[in-house]
Length: 139
Image 1: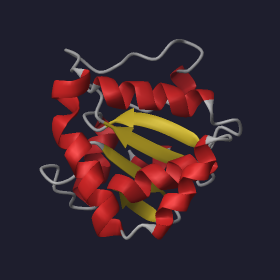
Image 2: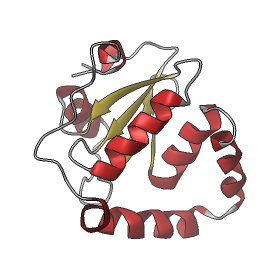
Image 3: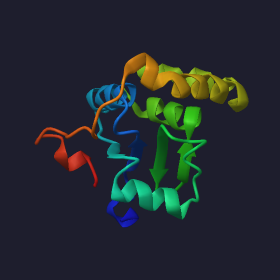
Image 4: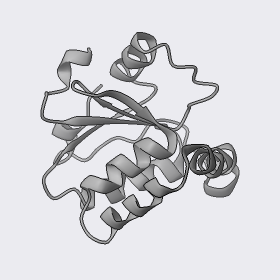
């Protein structure tokens, strides 16, 4: 499963039923000019394989995981900022938040993640990519 991720790409695992997560994935796709990223729901086979390999407690991390063959995984605010770093301007400017200590960034991140279904809603099933985007999504 994990070998599906090419060495020159990073995989964003996201909550496939979360409206905020799905709109964030759409934003990344539109602002990833060099197509650095591939995508898969946490609920997918590759998502579950990465969760198992890295022994991730999905009770504590349930909204974004960034995986690459070279650097392993990043979670929560660190994952989001590493994604933003590769995006087009002005999103790449979010890297200034790396100066904020991780415990503060993650507190804010966890607060939003805890309320995301209430604030943004939830889908019945994972998003289905369009035929043009299918190659950027892993199962």
